[in-house]
Length: 206
Image (cartoon, rainbow, N blue to C red; front, side, top):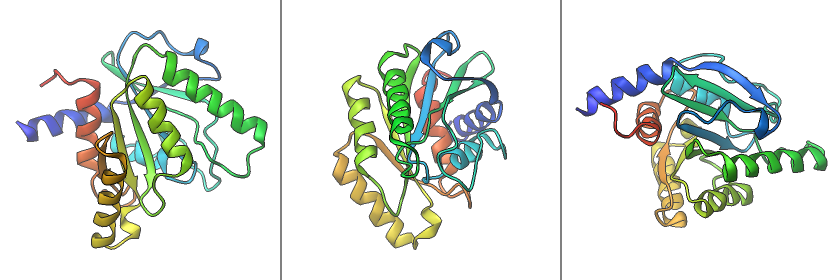
């Protein structure tokens, strides 16, 4: 059954297609299906992880310059669900006014989007749980929403160091989220991430 569920998750996520971008919640599509949102620091590889779990090279925009995602980007999975790429946070070179706008947009979406059923927070496994990461988890808990933490760039550490980093995060958050180590570059942990995302989005299917 788990193999069947994993195959379903992979097929569903691979069906992702860009729907629209929104500069404010009022410009978002109608909240007519479940959504899961992806958040993360601008250098954590959020766009790369979205592309990896959807098996698409350029669904989410990647750039050598962090902080390029400045809108709410919606991707539909047919008529069943949506993925939402939130603006990256913590980009030091962005003007203070821009960073405030990004944070206001993210907070408004997390608080008021009726269709939102879960949040995926992507962190660099070498530098997890920054102050802004913790703020995202607190927003999630306040609503409350289930949360998945994906520790990206696990390939940058040895297996032992990556496992230790994961355990450190698990202890620090005390069960507040599912924690997985992944690498968008090598594919490590991506199948587990797909399954976790779809289990949040559509828990009753298959």
